Image (cartoon, rainbow, N blue to C red; front, top):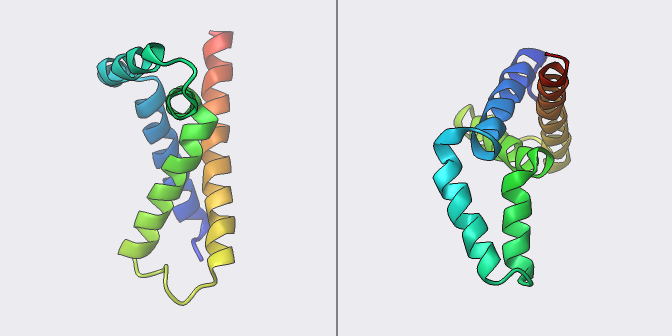
Length: 112
């Protein structure tokens, strides 16, 4: 099981990864192409799902946190020997902490 320091590290990485994928200008060309792709068939459920994923910090944050946690657990040898349910709870904790950082960031941006 991950400890609080690992949770904080993974949450910070999840927050930053989510910001990169959803908001940072470096990926604007990719997001623009996906929006254009969606506009060609706006009734497509799959295309709508992709556009929703790339524009929602909660949606993207969930998957980014899961990918980071799985990678971390596999690389540190902590994945095997633990119940899968425990890793599910860890995923919820990492994603929740990362989205909390996103909420704090959004709130501070509105105040400033």
